[in-house]
Image (cartoon, rainbow, N blue to C red):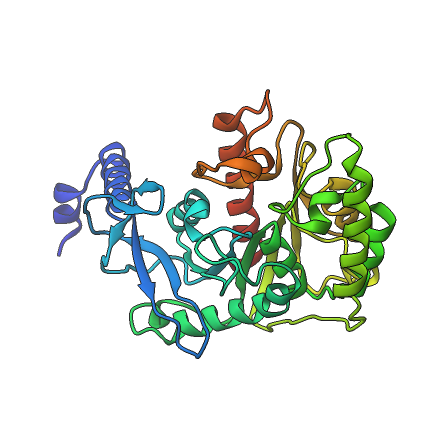
Length: 354
């Protein structure tokens, strides 16, 4: 073709720029939806794995637990950034309370796996506590295996540089995956020394509470006896997975960790704390992680946030649980939560993508 023909059909630079902008916007819109898959557990005793992923399909929202979520069930996956992030829910909770974070991650191109932790969830919490804590990081590894083995998702993902996020007991889970180790006896020692100051963390959220009255002395005495009896195992527990390359721990339960292992995290660790957490006293848990892990990245210290600040969408709870996870007066959820979610997405983009 002659040079004249080229000039005759050339697109003016301004129009060329406009066309590319439109194409980019159309491509973004086409991949703006989030698909939903629910994969049965592949091994004996493994709970199902919920998967959020980028899709170009459209469909009605889905109803899961208490929420109507903007997800397209069974939609065809499209290739995103090739990376997987696993989200470990708290106790007693479920994957759906982390839906807003999972959706934000899919918008950035990630596939997100959310395992149901066996007998430590909103339907069955009979193993909540140390029994579940020993098992949880293995369940994260099993969830990675499950997603990578799935014909829909395996071809779209690299098997290395996986991210992991966890909140509360899920934060405890990802601290192990990052190289931390804990023991029931360490929790016993902490609780015997700081029972009144960290009562809920030591006795659980649904048993009883201290109210300043004369029965408190009896409650403390009984709690000390039970703690000394049940938490006498000095074994250090841990589990790592070479595929996991970065983790974020939100308001983690952490008073039972060996501080030396927290100081020597084997990967980038992002930390989120909430100063008005009445379930896990910050100075014994999240702030203790920050003191030990001086090289970790403190993504947010939510000044007015409580233990449930990272639950999004926010569930409706009743009784004692509602008191522990409800938003304190003055917490601006509409502003704070999207900001924290954006920081988590940015953290994984920085540490997992080329």
